[in-house]
Image 1 (cartoon, helix red, strand yellow):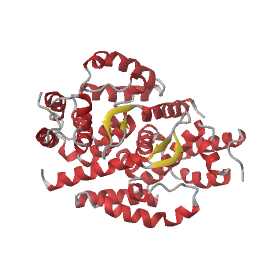
Image 2 (tube, chains in turn orange, red):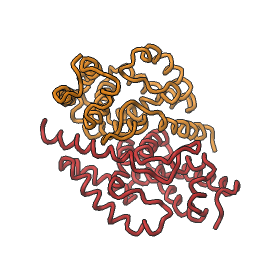
Image 3 (cartoon, chains in turn cyan, green):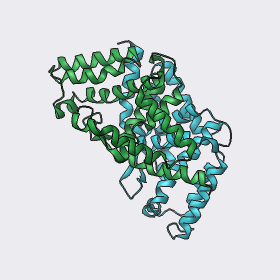
Image 4 (cartoon, chains in turn green, purple):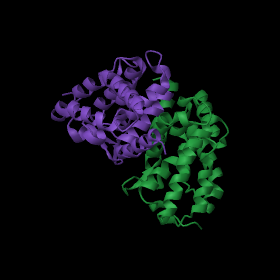
Length: 196
Length: 196
């Protein structure tokens, strides 16, 4: 087997580990915690189905791939909960080291390609990255909404915190931000999310 | 919220159930059984990384979406093991009913689009569908290879059966079929896969 293909297959086997990185979000129906691979799969399907709501025109293949790989660094760095200020402080250093190790398994050109796509997502400046962030926010919100805000309750999260996080949906999609607002207001009204 | 978006979000929540449909394949490192959403995620990443090996030029976004949704019918129909002749007899009827129910949740145009993409995969005739089948075969083979053929051993699967199934990789990719041959021969040589 040639070296290029050998490296690609080793990377593909390595990222299997993403299926064992669990998030704070739980599956709909009050199920178990969701893992990163499942979250990424769900986002990528959403990327295709909801693309007409992206604020600017997007290359949907690039959005889908961005969604599929945006959490790969968590294989080494672990999942950092969006409302954990201590973990957020060290997140970048942990994820940078992981990014270098994991993408270096690929052939040089694909290492560069995936690193660039990952960094584009992180920077959140292109139409594709903004839309992908909308999906990264909306996907767990839909699950948590279906579970009466159980994930927020488990962590004592307030509406103020959720508004802060979900604000990042708006640059990617006005329409999906309207859904976000409706969900948050609905959860507050149901008493599942305290204002402060 | 308008009707179109409401239907899209209900479909998106419905397919969350795909994360609870478990396959016969186990994660690398001898881990737990893999579920359909994880398998689809892995295939879609492979679709992007290995696209130069597709026998014909492919629209990678269509391949990725095909990979992401190709098992959605199993939400109702369950996973049918590739080496279970009894289950294979009823697979089509079970999956047809599921296809109608699940895709009907979407707006009409997207129901038609996803149904067509699903059926294109099933028919296996276009360059995209042939390549997606190569990935559908190779992904579990890589995991099982990393686990010394444990999934074959658990079901008493023979090399003859594996050759039969994996033959479907060749129309999509000569290069990936070479990898397939090397893996099968390696597993036979290790005594993990009896010839008959």
